[in-house]
Amino acid sequence: MRLKDKVAIVSGAGTRGPMPGTGQATAILYARQGAKVLLTDLDLARAEETRASIAAEGGTASVFQADVTSEADCRAMIEACVARYGRLDVLFNNVGGIGAGKVSEIEEAQLDRSLAVNLKGAIFTCKHAIPAMIESGGGSIINVSSIDGLRAGWTPNVPYAVAKAGLAQLTRVTAVHHGRENIRANCIAPGHLYAPFVANISDERRELRRKAGPLGTEGDAWDVAWAAVFLASDESRWISGAVLPIDGGLLAATPLAVYDNLI
Ligand SMILES: NC(=O)c1ccc[n+]([C@@H]2O[C@H](COP(=O)([O-])OP(=O)(O)OC[C@H]3O[C@@H](n4cnc5c(N)ncnc54)[C@H](O)[C@@H]3O)[C@@H](O)[C@H]2O)c1
Image (cartoon, rainbow, N blue to C red):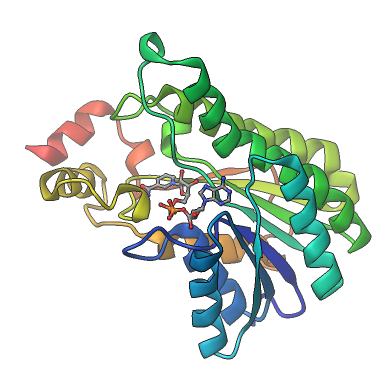
């Protein structure tokens, strides 16, 4: 029970399937570790699926519909959490995904939408979570970025990449500006996970993603979720402002080292 007595919000706590996403897996582990969890999602039916899994295991969770691209929804989810559970200790900012294209191809509306889903939502969720965390004596914020926010990615995805890079910096400024209020902020940067986000890729591409990493094994949402448990718990009480790749070692490799894995 590493999160006993803690209250957590997980945004994007459902999954677009067919396997658990990082939000769903994290919400399930948070509840298994004793936290009460507010499961927020644009799609309430998806969050409800996660709630049912947690309830079946005897955990405590409830759902709340919120579109993170709306500041009003970001504020409402924090208020709902405090109204239901009396406090807020942990925020897992998980929503993200869209944003294809090279910089020479980007269209304005598409860029605005991607930045809103991947970055603006996390900013406004932090904005409204921090006062509630201060009221609770402090808290832990975990932003879900991507290795594509730290290095130029495999596919052209400039709106996504710059938004994910922004999440790493959001993490650092939050950690610095709110450290004295006992707010910790950390960032998880998943690598080539096999998760809903990429469920439609070909078997060949999936295999290349696995082989490219130094470990040569495939990661999934549970690998992210275990790190999210640690960063939410008091075990990580002296860790703040960090960006943690969860990528099977990929970011440690030079391009030629990765090439060697593929031949
Ligand atoms: N799969 C990967 O390889 C990978 C790699 C790096 C980072 N990530 C990141 O992991 C996170 C989760 O991806 P996933 O594939 O595990 O889950 P996912 O794509 O299934 O998304 C989880 C939930 O987010 C909800 N959602 C989407 N837009 C929303 C909005 N505007 N407001 C509220 N909820 C919304 C969806 O309804 C869905 O239930 C994303 O931030 C993604 O960028 C994934």
